[in-house]
Structures are given as structure tokens and as C-alpha cells.
Image (tube, rainbow, N blue to C red; front, top):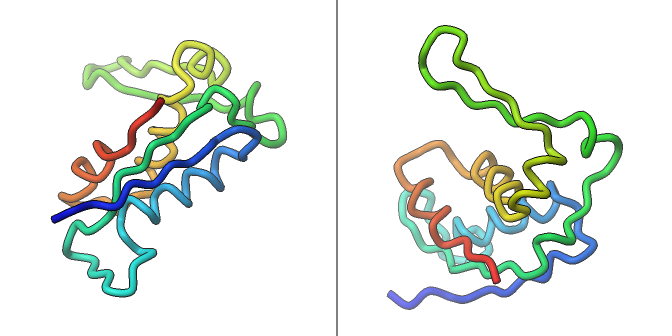
Length: 115
């Protein structure tokens, strides 16, 4: 099966709106023969991920959490620090949260590439 290739320029785009657009392309919901149980989405290449914008005070207030599994093992990373370290990570987290929570999610997120 040949997958479509989509190129998106993220310059001056709002994070959430861009992430929802990418999630639709990765699922294949833009196609007329979409089926939720089959993986028919395309490959999405994002360029200028370091120029994504966020609205409001999210740059100062938003935090990402992860847990080690041990008691008291919760870690938090501020948006600003995470964005400075790897801007693509912020977009991947946003798109990953917008994909359906099923067995196809990990396969779909692997088709999100950065230039």
C-alpha cells in the first residue's frame, strides 16, 4: 500500500490547531474511504517545528508530567524547558494525545517526521 506524503510548514501556527490537523492526516480521515479499524493515513513531514506558537500564558504555565511507577516518582517538565530542548517533542506529545487510544496509535505516531 502506497501512503500519501504530506508536508506541513509549522511556522507561525498554533500548537493545538496544527496537532489536530496532523492527527486527522495520520488517521486518514481526510480520505473518502476512511475506515476506523484500518490504518490508511499518510506520512506527515513537519518543517520549522521550532517556530510553533502557543496562545495565552501556556509557555509559562503548561507542564508535562511523567511517572516512574514508584511512589513519589512523578516528574514535571515546564513547557518552556521542553520546547527549548526539543521543539518536535512538544508537537509529538500534542498529536499523540489527539490520536485514538487503540493499538494503531503507536504505528500512526511513527509516521510523523521532522525536517
